[in-house]
Image (cartoon, rainbow, N blue to C red):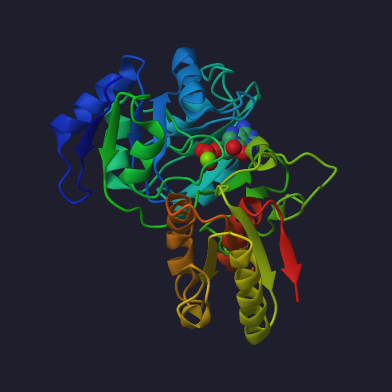
Length: 349
Ligand code: AMP
Ligand code: MG
């Protein structure tokens, strides 16, 4: 299959191009598109055949449900059994935006889209080209991240093409994404809404709207006996090809430890990599050293993390060490993804 790559500009929406892209979805095909979080791999959420194609293109296990993207609040009712009052409040505050809510699904949503679950995850993204595309596609676009299963989510169209060229009809290239980590997922089917996956919208932000919000106990844990409620969280996600170890501790100890390890491993024939921050990166002596951004503004780190993991793959780095990050605010989402990428390989000095 020849994959068409088309430039889209959030500031100047080209209706005709998006109509063409929407037509592909209506006809049962797949189109990758930019959102504010990461690139999505879109198909018609109401067409079981489209969802099957998404799983095939990603190489994703079919028990891992997709998120349904909408472009108007009034379209939510068609997908769900009921809309709890708390969900209306969250939507008013955070939609369009990087928040996914889970509801009991209506008959309209095929089980192929929800991985066989009787609940459905729904999000309204804020990216303007994404909203126009969803409208042209018929209003209901199922879209997981547009990476091959097990690879970091794509934060630019270049990485979508790396994973998906030849497998899907079209890629809408909207440049680099704004946030760089996937949406926060919150389960609205419980009496007390529960966060299943941390993201840009933090627990504190949600608690400004709702009095109490829970957290899935498996979110940051390793080897938990309990299965995570968001099925995707059980898979080893976001993994670079090289080994990755997180090193936690006082700044000076961390630098010294990582320099010792990279020196030792280089002698053993490894190509070594380091993920540091703007303030520390010059001190490292690994073969490939990359700053994830500014510790004082962790949004910069969220934005760069997946790109950096992919670059270590491109440069064939075989042993990577990363500094650890604070788990306050968006830091929780950063550490959640980094721990998964590292297979929970962390050392506390
Ligand atoms: P991705 O779009 O790649 O970020 O993957 C979507 C993720 O959303 C899945 O891996 C699940 O973890 C989660 N998800 C989607 N639908 C549901 C649902 N009905 N219940 C719980 N988690 C869900
Ligand atoms: Mg994903």
